[in-house]
Length: 428
Image (cartoon, rainbow, N blue to C red; front, side, top):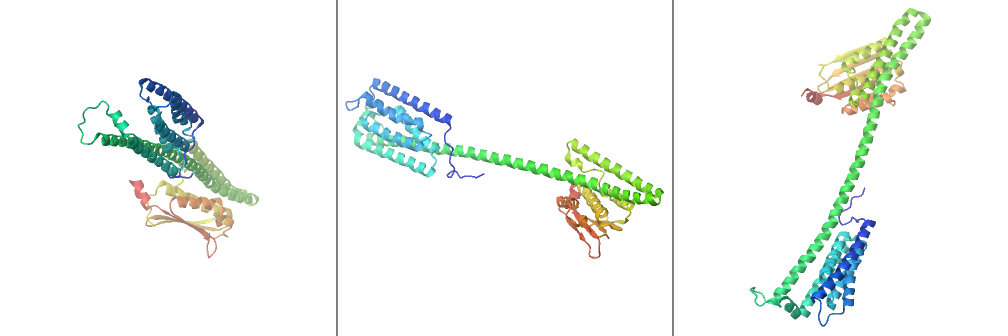
């Protein structure tokens, strides 16, 4: 979503409800202006020998206030029209003072709060204010005797240091400076307030979209993790069971008594696979996704993987090197799954006779080395789900993974998982 500056932003136009409110406001202010004119005439305030008749006075009261009915739809035009009629009514001596001043204030304020072109709005308001001060200066020059007489008719003594005329002039300018300055600043403040609300709404929308995207990524990540776990749990045991079933089939033709160990291995593998699936599904139903990493699958169980590979007919060399260090559960589980997947690929694709599994505890990282002497087929080559899962597990721990054919034949998977700082953190 675009982010505008306060000068570039364009405020949305008034809503239908706001337009209706403006219409009723303009009509109501006009009615009050006519009522005010009637009351002022009753007091004699707007009556003199040069005053126009009542119909013309009503005309000036109406044209000065009624444009407020369109103040938010056409703020520039309304401000200009009211300003022109305000001065014209004063020049005719028929201007209704009270409501006309409020109308002028509202028109200039609305131009500041709703004018879409900010530079034009600023220049237009400054122009109106300049013209108003020019008219004020001209009024003092033309009617200073009447001004002094009206302001000090009942005053017999003055205690200030300025002449009465200059005091009256300064008071007039001071009042108008406060009047127009306040109107100008209030309009800008209203525009900025609505702009800030727009910014907050925009940021809230961006935050909502980011939260939805994060939730979608979390769901996708969880689906990938569950798929990886299911693959690791099922593929290994099913691969071993398949190899044992093939051995059992051949033994049944030659020596049925030799099929018993293979059938036992198939039975154990099936039971283990079902138990692991049951634990995983139970963890997912419990609402704790992190528990889907099976607590029984850790580095201390890797030797069992080697034993199952031996039962499948491979000659397995297993060794642990270095001083074993306490590992965080996540590293231990990742190590187990990486070795498990590597052995599964060997059983499924390599047609190997020998398998070498080595675990090395280095200074601050764990190295896993699984190598075979097979053909290094496509499944072990690194484009399947198994290798993708291994890379994901290694990446989570900021480790490295090397997988590929060996120069002397066979296939090797070597992974390094840092654990130094994580071990210290878990011990604390």
